[in-house]
Image (tube, rainbow, N blue to C red; front, side):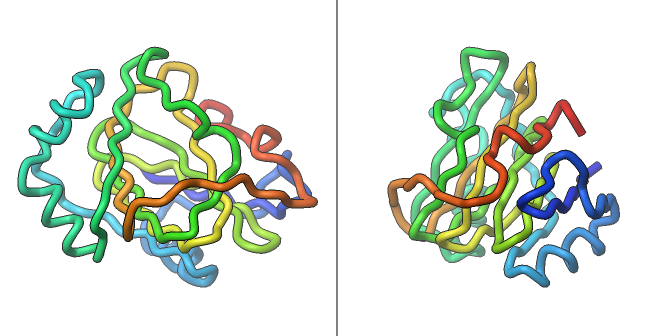
Length: 178
C-alpha cells in the first residue's frame, strides 16, 4: 500500500496528514506540483542482480516509460541488503532537471521538500512520482533494503546540496519509522 505522510518543514516529529488512498495521494501531491501515478508493470526484476540484469529484465518496458515520461536518461537503483545501498541518497539533494522515480520491485520512500511542506511517499511496485527540478529530495530504503527502482531523467544531471532553515532530512521518519 502506498502511503503519503505530509509534514511542515519545521515539525518532523509529527505528520500533519497521512493518506493511503491513491486518489487522495495524487490530489494532495498535485496541489504542490508533484505528480503521483500508478502503472501496470510487466517486468519483474529481482533485486540484487546488478544494473545490467535489471536493464535486461525491464526490456522494452524501460524505453516505453522513458518515452511516456518525456525522459532521455535513467539511473537504476538495485538494492538487496546493505551491499546495494546507494551512496548519498539519504541526504537531501536537488537536481536542475525533472526526475520520475518508478518502483519495479520492493518498496522505497522518496521524500520531497516543496516550500514549507515535506512529502514522504512510501512507494511500492508500479508507483511513479514526478519531482520537479529544484525540489529537495532524499531516499529511505529501510534497515533491510530490497528494491529495484529507476530514476527517469529529462537528461543527465548532477545533484546539488540543498540548504533549508527547516528540519534536516535525517530528522524526518524514514521508511521503517512510519
